[in-house]
Image (tube, rainbow, N blue to C red; front, side, top):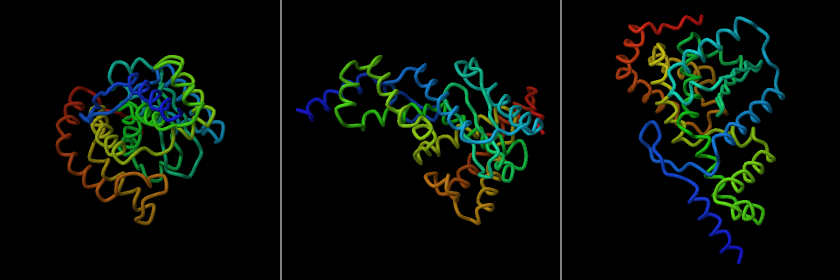
Length: 268
């Protein structure tokens, strides 16, 4: 009986989802959670992360990061520009950053050891925002909801194909730790896509897209030629650099047009 109920529950979940197209044209399955619920999870993960770390009080560094975020966000589709984006700079040696639904961006001070200028910092943050606008978090939750088994999930999913069922599952994810659910690295496909979307975004904002190549080269040099632990599920570093090098020339015109239109960030 349980397998039958599970099949029904999964079928109901799938009916609540939709096949859509990502910014790169990739087909993806998303849905089962509303935007409000997604934003709530993002806010919870952001709060958890800040509570476990130490926020930087350096006014220059905070202004620098916020300036880069503002320049990137200004070029997002309308539905994301209307969000009040919040940025947190955390004192942490790990060169890392993240962005979450609901307009949340976190950056570790360790990123400054590899992002040597504003363009390279924009490459990092643009990549992370690329995950948000490509709906990677929603895609991941949709997969998790479809993969979960057990009577608790059956009860949540059988209640409704959307609404209450989705809310129950979101509650379960939150109970397990929104930080873990949201901040684990994405798939290699998602990471490659975020590279593409982020590099274009930085060019549209007036940052030099060729600097994305230098950023990842710095990352590799800082880790002794090995991929850092937090990049373990990312594409092969050498392939990633080659792909960024491949795409930079085609984005040169986008970058030059942004500069001609007056988008010349001066963040420091």
